[in-house]
Image 1: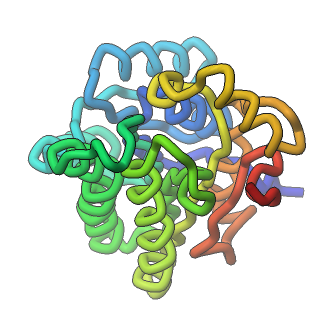
Image 2: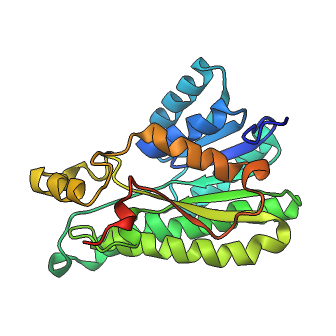
Length: 256
């Protein structure tokens, strides 16, 4: 019986693969056989993820790019193609957050977050998907959304709006790319404490989250790996596109 989750021979590009959650998912893809390009704004952090993957017997290489600077993304795409010949999987995990209350929000901050979380994701996808289509390469694009995209949360207004946009983009592009056998799905993580959200997690906030999470705990980064591997595998999820897969400890099933 074939292994539904075997990614041997696949090339994955993990944009934001140097972040806490992006790195964990990239490591999961590598552990199941994919060769992974770790793309991040901070090259040193990306190289550290590569070392972890190689230490576990996987294959990876680090590339520098900032999704708010599309020229750097274009260059990274060319460098990755020269290294690997192309790619089958794109993991979009860039992220930027802020706890500024809505009435104090200014346009510069709005633009900064949107440039990374939504505009950057959209146009990075355009760059990488174009080449997949040109090469007639079937594959999977996985966008990382957030529980705040569907459940209104205080203190993260701009972030929530950007991730709601990611959900919409995911479902639109699933239809757009279906004729090319490129599947587009999103993972909606619940609360996984990481660099970008620790600043909003004071004691009262933690208590509120736990009260609305049936499993009564935060997620561990490794618990996102299964969803990423599943959506990356043509064997396991070949007829799945346009889905918004929740990994949230039941948070999305609760009312607030």
